[in-house]
Length: 322
Image (cartoon, one colour):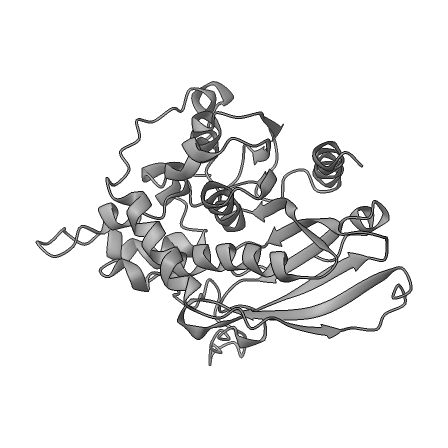
């Protein structure tokens, strides 16, 4: 963190929101365009030691722009359609592993690989002086698109979330009305969008959320790769054609907060140098729902670890009543 921040300062973060007047129209138009793209779901069973107890599949389906979204779907072998937790990982981070605790409870898991990640991720170039990958390199997925909002990376990611929920409705063994969305940092923004624009989500787990209340505090955290990628655009002077910060408002997840009416579990590390605590509290404070937050005073973006995993599990048991 550039400077220490107090809990009281964070707790009082309740910014006045000024969302675009056509925010809902913009997203309804995007969802309508997505619905014209066929889902084209595929399933490939993976044989593992636990196969007798659960079905593990590599899955794929089509997103906006005819992009193929990939993931792993684990369904416990129990009678009836199973409730499901969907995981969205952080930007440039690996997917979470299949969690035994959920499988033991008879809960399915879907782990989505973010668009442009996984095997297709562009690799960091080699530094000729060291022979190692260049440090602080990132693929610049956030560098362009704000001058034409339909091309911005976050629009595609948000619509991928909507398509993920449609995919689950088509999947055998899944209860498409019993879904919890679990996001880590950037993945939390995706989860918030999913709950804001569909009515099938029963709960949210938002670990150290980012891409919420993107103001000077969040933008000061240059360790965050999407911040570094976007800053050149945001620091440009507004022209008659485009005001980049106004364009960004269509994607800032704090503007979806008022739509959330389901239970939400947050986590926050007060020494986080990737997801600013004030931004996390801004999202939290603007939600009018059953909400709670696990706070870790001396931890950063990986706040909580095993303790948070247990809190997440208890939350899931509460929501699904298992």
